[in-house]
Length: 340
Image (cartoon, rainbow, N blue to C red; front, side, top):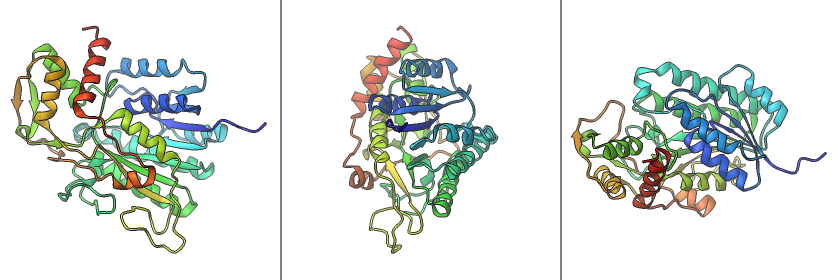
């Protein structure tokens, strides 16, 4: 019997981005296989709620296990033979990587290795692997372009993600696997992670407690609304990289000269001052924030800013949700979720 529906394997399916991506893919008629270990890095109840909503869809099934579990992924690939793979499972967070580096080694390095081996045995049409804007590290030239060197990562989290890019390139070159690495920039929105600034700041403002503002507020972030990010990923699925036969890469493209591999920024391309971000929260909550000014944290960078011209040239799409609109949606969700 011919398989008519396309199958997408999504690792980290119960995570913040994973939930919205799976929902989008299911709405578009894909069959989705999720893998998520429901780790306790943050409130497991939030992940369980996301997963329960996805399980209401008949085209979704999930395996609750770690991607680094030996032979798990190769068994899943043998059974499901996914057409497309989107790898989001990872230990996230810059600051947590200072205190718990081994969890990043196991999830981000070993887990990605297990995925690459599974794809080597059962090649998908296209694999998209999550990287991060943190990979740009100490680069001061902005906006960040995919074709500039990124060699000086500032945290172990960022180092593991940059390593993932290199690992994936080697498999793309050796085994002809079409792989897109996407570097995303400070993703936010409803159902977001409690360890992220928006969640923590909103909670504090509504409770009337001070918020910790690092680098005395002298920070800029290229905040990217989650549904914008997911739409960009969805469009990139249909744009697998092809190895250039003559080894010549078009100007402005991050395509490898020796492999069907490229890296693509997904950002809003509109950096927001931290104080403006806080002002958006104040506007949405109707309350003023009490600021506790702090020095810069180890492993952090003062600014991020994505050049998204490559994403636009490949897909015609540029994320563009305004920070006030996006923050407003999050605050509405937060109040509803916590019944405030």
